[in-house]
Image (cartoon, rainbow, N blue to C red; front, side, top):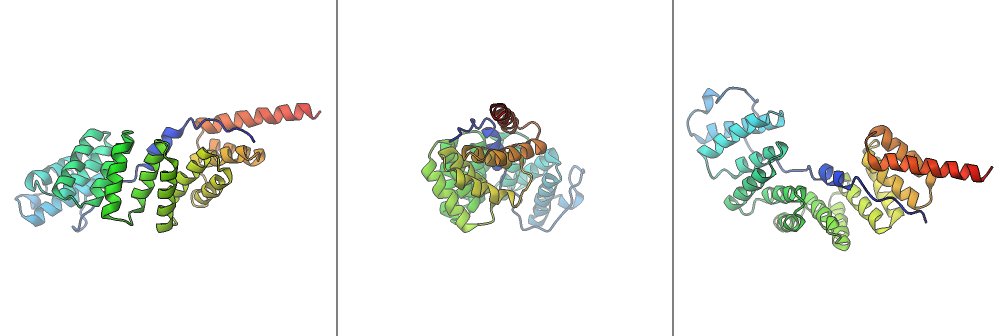
Length: 275
């Protein structure tokens, strides 16, 4: 059986998969992000005015005006220090600004204010996973699942953290349970397919990665992973097709570039031997 190459772009899996945060939790009516210091209608400490500020902060975050969002959410916290939703959303905005430590602080405060806030536990766990603090991430995801057993993304992210710690049985159990809850969650299919690839269950890897590609046909990383599985199965033609498609989708993807070079050279050697 053909040996596959090391998964040199594995880190990008974590970065792409773990950008799934539970943000923008609010019951306020929709607002529009403004550039004013504070809209006149929000002056004072009335609860309705605070809700307007909160929604403005969320809208600014969604619009990509991240510094503005932080300013507004900080104002909400100043006026209502027990507003756990403001801390959650400010933490998620800090993530996008690259301030992981500040995000952890905000999520921790949200949890202290509202210990049953599953989304805050989940987001903090996701941040810890970004920081490669996998044991802390697993603990937070486990609490998320205790509070909200149908939180499929928490199961998938806990599976990812276990995978990174080489706890493959635990990871497989979580992926499979999550997919039972949410069969259309391609994020979990990718994770389980990548796990099958790691443990040498290559046909199962092909099956899961093919499911992902049925929804995201041009995803470079998924194509490259399926190519590795095909190569390990000795199906070089399918592998080369996938590596080439992955390279077309992302010319900088190292595993795809190496795969095309490796299989092309093998094909040339085979042709020379058959002459």
